[in-house]
Length: 145
Image 1 (cartoon, rainbow, N blue to C red):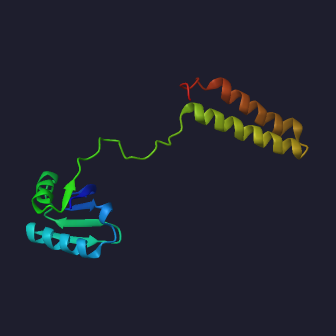
Image 2 (image 1 turned 180 degrees about the horizontal axis):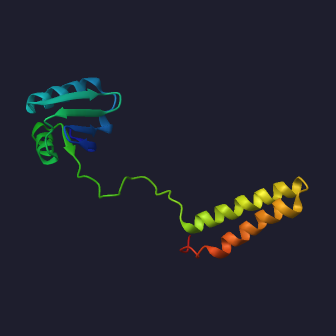
């Protein structure tokens, strides 16, 4: 059985590979660790079945070499690395339009709190002014769905 593997971290002398399909299979990971250690002299191999990962330190092979080794031993298939910036996670950065909406809501809430406290003129009026000024000074953001 060939298992999908992905390199999740790589720096000089260190590589971490995840094999989520086999997570929890201690026997399989021990066999994989022995196979990799025998095939890669000068490279220390540590396996962790609980997390489904393999950590290689020392003389770490290039990904092409690792891919060929996985095919030769029929133990794993190393997937191609994802495109730069494609982390598989949602982009949660705030745009100018989002910040404008957020600041308007915050200033309106602050103004309502001050009105409830009976401080209508100075604090509440100031917060309402900031909410209005923030909407007028920021350029309109891109259309959102």
